[in-house]
Image 1 (cartoon, rainbow, N blue to C red):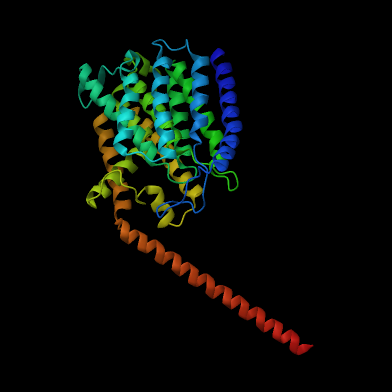
Image 2: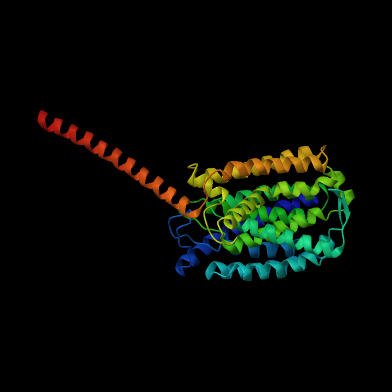
Length: 392
């Protein structure tokens, strides 16, 4: 009962802080002319305020202050330095673009604070692929790589209105349920705080007159929190999994299913860029959400909703399968789904030059059709007016 009251108060407080602060951020950004200018690969056509992630940062700092003491290993004090590093780096990248290498170094510094806390140490994979105990240095390598992958994967899906918010909300709902069931209330309260921030931000992100982007400031912070939650989930003690509706050995596959949207999209985009002899971090319009918009003609809201629903359904499917199936069967299932999705999205020609030409041609055809319809309407209207004049 005490947890429920705290959770409700924390959700309301975090929601109000984010909701009331974002209009102030929009006003400052507009006055100082710090808006995001659209370019050849942007999904928006007008200058839009960014820096929405500023509200996430200080809301999380306040939340960590109020829920401190519920963490057994003083995790809050280790999370705050990492959050601050990524906040500063994200803010600088939103204002003056910094190189991917500099961002990676900053991310590595931020996640070091998490890896050294004993609460997040993964000591065993509990039989996943027949692997049990793992050395500490292997944990540091796996944990560091996993956190870097999650942070950058989430950062990369922030490309259209509402997508990063919806995917983040789905992930937070799942982790809230998991940590509540296993009694890790500190982490459950963090997920509730982040969810409140994302829900409050979502309304502005899809708005037509008060739109704002979370920017790298926001996506790096949310990606960092997601990576922390994933690491903690995999570091849970074996007895904790007795409260969860899936087998202990399937935990790594459940984690992958929770993050399937950012992980699949990042792997796919990196593969395409390398195949086109470009750097993995070079910008383009090869993301899944760009395909849904450019090729399938969906709006930002429709594409975000479809991807969010897919993420949720995929997790539910794997939790159901994970309650009975051994991890070898789960791995086969996961590989099959990835191969199927790869076939669907790889059948298009994703060379950036060809893609740009196809988009321009599609727009020209639409403009020609629109002009023809307008001329036909004018012709009909003119004929009607002539007949009326003749009658007079």
